[in-house]
Image (cartoon, rainbow, N blue to C red):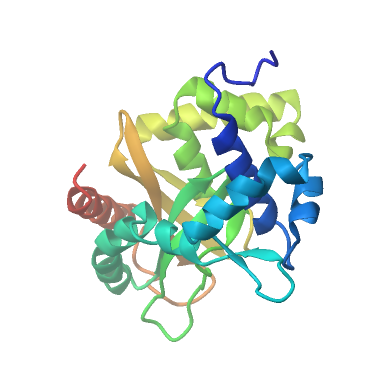
Amino acid sequence: MPQNESKYQAPALDKGLDILEYLSSQSVPLSQTEIATGISRSSNEIYRMLVSLETRGYVLRDEISGKYRLSLKLYHLSHRHSPIDELCKAAQFPIEELAAAVRQSCHLSILYLDQLMVVLHVKSPEPIALSVEEGNLFPLPLTASGKVLLAYMPAAERNKLLSENAHYKEFSATEKRSFLNSLEQIKTEGAYIKTSDLAEGVVDISVPVGNKDSNVVACLTVSRLTTLNINKGRKNEEILKEAFLCADRIRKRIGL
């Protein structure tokens, strides 16, 4: 038995998932034969499963061509209760207040596979402001938010993720040691302030959201524009205090 193969197998379920995953990867409806070929099974093997998926509303069969395509049922199920939606709802008002107080743009990020995903952005009330589009993905090792999330991950999980990360693999041995040491420092200090590696004239002030010992779910970042006369008199440390208060409010609103 292959190492990654579970000893608890459910062949019928596997067939159904194979069909759904394959249809989701195709842009056009497919016949029973085409689906069978695509998932390396016989046409007879998947007939009953296709009938069942059609009956349950997961796939639709065209009356004329007889070809199958996915319905919107999976989309509907995935959006009934989204942890990300709940997180954003809890964070929206506190981050809006933070942006108004520090006069800088703020965003909330989470880990997505081996990248950083921005799930909520609140623009600065100033006429000139940094904008980070929600849903965008960024390399974890090159962002302040990513480093904060990495710092609070269990060591084994973090090491596995970094070993497969394309950007981290390009680091020299010295750079890797320095990077890992910086993660330890972030966890010790509970925050990270750094000039952005991705945008000139920006300082990122990042704090974890969650229980720092075991359950950090997101990272809150204030992206301070340093090249404009916005809040010139306000120091990074003052903004950091506001960010800590905001992160604590979010933590309480999500029940951690």
